[in-house]
Image 1: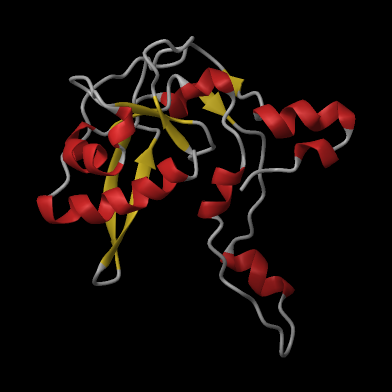
Image 2: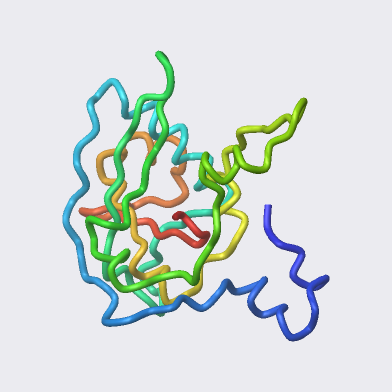
Length: 180
């Protein structure tokens, strides 16, 4: 899924196609530490979530001939979701990315502001907006600092993506869509 950029006003098509240029202060981080290892019983379930991102081209392998190599990786971990599922969490704080990029004000209602607008027989819905962010392209300058080290999934990657062999010592992918 992606934005139908050619239907946007001509002056905004490049933003819909290429992503919104980030507001940045300071230098982009350089953080290449290995991620926290997942428990063995979580790896296949976590990989099934990551595999959806790969299949939808939200993340892609770092090509050795790429113009921009990955200069920073982001940390990730699993959070239990019910008794038999988990949610992958990608953390921009550990690598320092959250400290150098920012967004203009984005108003979200609080419980207090919502209660003030409710009337008798009014109904509200709890919606999860987290998955909608992957519809938006990640600006190219942030792709090189949004790497993911998938080395702990080497055997699963070799099984599901044999065409991408040979994998190096570290298996780095990068986000091409907004991940946070």
